[in-house]
Amino acid sequence: MAWHSLFARNLFIRPNADELMGFEPDFTVISLPSFKADPARDGTHSETFILVNLGRRIVLIGGTGYAGEIKKSIFTALNYLLPAQSVFPMHCSANTDVDGSDVALFFGLSGTGKTTLSADPSRRLIGDDEHGWSDRGVFNFEGGCYAKTIRIRKDSEPEIYAATESFGTILENVVFDPRTRVPDYDSDEKTENTRAAYPVDLIPNAIPNGMGSHPHNVLFLSADAYGVMPPVARLDDDQMRHYFLSGYTAKVAGTERGVTEPEPIFSTCFAAPFLVLPPERYADMLIERVKRHHVDVWMLNTGWVGGPYGVGERMSIAHTRAIVRAVLNGDLRGVNTHVDPIFGLHIPNRVPGVPREVLDTRDSWPDPEEYDRQAAKLRGMFEENINDIGKSASSAG
Image 1 (cartoon, rainbow, N blue to C red):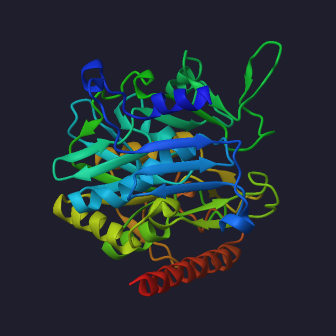
Image 2 (spheres, rainbow, N blue to C red):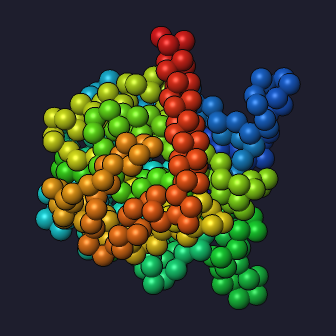
């Protein structure tokens, strides 16, 4: 499809005229949305397939028009190729301060704020989704951004909103008025997963070469629909490994067909569908780099506070931005903390611009004992998931 070709041009790094002279591709991606698999004959799970042949360096995509599969198939290949070159491939966004010395990485699944929080007008964007961490620093795999647009607002996400209105941007799954051609970003008629695909240079403060130094801070983002994870906690080495391997967020009622209550989503290393090597290999690469470069690691809940979905409230983006600002400014170093009784996480007692009742997760619930029950339930889900990862790693070994 023509728009798939434009998507590839927007999202992959665009070679200049000199680089195109004598250019030979390392991988070929063939996307055939109308061609469907026959599960009985082809051994697939459905009519949709994404086949990556690392030996022949060919990707075949069929049975789906979702453009994200085009870029994610190459991310999958990079997850196999780069560790052998001492590069840690990461499903994260990245930004830095104005002079380029204070890089931050944001890991998170769809809908957790990865793109939104990295597109900060006071900082410079390195990239919004896929990066490598080498001995020289962090670099973007892509030349574009793939931002969720569901319920986007000009006042809260001005840079991304402006990009959606720019020439050449692709709006995917977005409902629009056929007469006026005005998009309805509040509509989830087609899917909650509405997207804008645009070149990264549409973000005014993006770094053209997509490169940065070693990070000072790594943030794990989770949209916890159970409302029991703290808005912010600093992680020690064991917790970092645990929550990186967990890759947690949650679906809520209404975001997916058939989901009527919160449902946990665990995506190993925040990138389960795209991992080729054992998960522990990627976790080891993260921990080694964090220790070597003295990086602080944090977990943020961008989901619900004061109760679960339907009872509590969604964490305001203003409060989340205030937490991120405090982390990056170093305001939380040395701040007194209290320990969450269920998860053992150290939660700061004070964050500039964030009310105390928002930070104290348990006390923000109308019934603290109900918090204990819900938190213990979620902790059990975490432990069961980690055990399953260990079993899979053992069988693979």
